[in-house]
Amino acid sequence: MKNPDKWVDRVCEGCKKPFQVRTCYLRRNHNVGRFCSNLCRRLRPEVAAISIHYRFKEQRDFRYKQYHKEVRLKALTFLCGGHPRCHRCGCDALPILEVNHLNGGGSVRKESGIKLWNYVLTLGESAKEYFNVLCKVCNQLDFVQRKFGYTQHKVAWDVSKKQRWIAVDFDGTLANFDCDWPADYTQVGEPIPAMVEQVKRWLQEGEDVRIFTARMDCYHPLFSDLTEEQVKKPVEDWCLRVFGQVLPITNKKDYWCKALYDDRAYHVVRNEGIIKMEEK
Image 1 (spheres, helix red, strand yellow):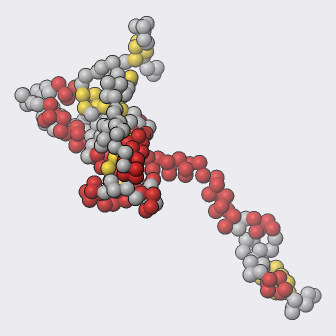
Image 2 (tube, rainbow, N blue to C red):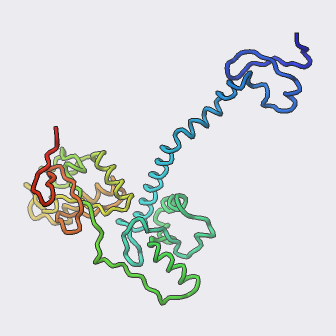
């Protein structure tokens, strides 16, 4: 029989079995006496939680990156009142656009990244009094002009070198075409989740995505003499609700169009004239 003055009865937090621990050990460390063996100690909830934390680290990091991209795009779109572009040179290359402090001081207040983007969205319309959108080049030029007073530099964005763009059909591709459009030209369908998510990914990657729709032909069986502004308004409102920004809307394809996504289109092999039919 062990001396009761030197040993204390405990119940293991892991296996719930009784065991004994020396009194001197309890005086040294309050964590001693919780588990009867190293096996139970390794299986304790704290260790299990840490294991799960690292097991799903890649998925969690991916979700964080996606969330950051969405908030950044919302902040840039809000400050520009539409398609994000530099307030100075007009650059619309999304990867190099930044939120700029109009009066400087961003490094002092430690406002950057997700903290800054959420702050802009929280301020609402008053944020436009303190922030604007600049490309990285114009942002550095703004710093040089404010810090050192040199105003001889000038930045120009060559709009003749157009960015390749992606055309996405509206009815039947982005929006369900089961709406009552034949009776009312303002009717638009509900978003098609798979294609909407794909367009959001393109926008986050800086792609120029445009709505490619026959609605811009201004034809309707019941309404005559419709203008482009009239037929464009319902689609613009739909884009603002779904994407948080208004995408360019057209029915014309030019040299810079690099891809067309349409529920009525077939893929033709370049320079061969072979139609690729989808295998059933």
